[in-house]
Length: 197
Image 1 (cartoon, rainbow, N blue to C red):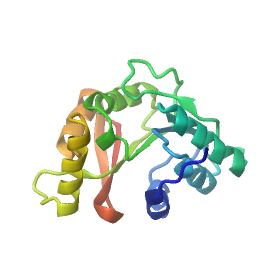
Image 2 (image 1 turned 90 degrees about the vertical axis):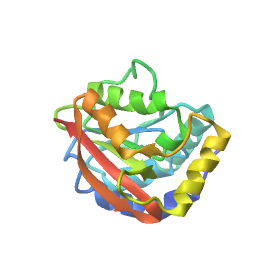
Image 3 (image 1 turned 30 degrees about the horizontal axis):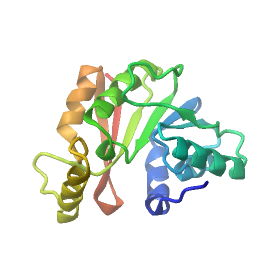
Image 4 (image 1 turned 180 degrees about the vertical axis):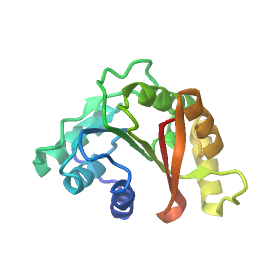
């Protein structure tokens, strides 16, 4: 029932280091597309002062997240909820922060738009929307591995593929969210942070 995502072990510690400077001191962090659930356990353990709410759309992922969470037994890690980022309504209350790791390139453009729309509604105050993954950027030559990855994704699904940072900035601006930080991460990934302007 528990899934294992090899990339999680590689990026968890660097991601936690970035989050330590971006997450608020208290409240609930809503994790969108929690996948296997390994990030949720690792990060809930790192940030014990925050409640961690994992979510996913895939029933098998939800089962895996809850299996990892049950084994970990962390008091600040909630059971996973079913959530579609593209849905008009998420059915969640206000949250202190939102984290989305490695979703945008393996989901529809509507999911990217929905992420910003939902974040604008759910985030309390200047809480951050934090997005991790591989992206293309204007003026920066993409590495060959990201070009190949993008081509492979689009071959599997025409609506998948690496998103352009500038397009995400436009989506954010349309919902009143401005990019406040950009971090270079291992394996040619980025962390992008958006907050209400």
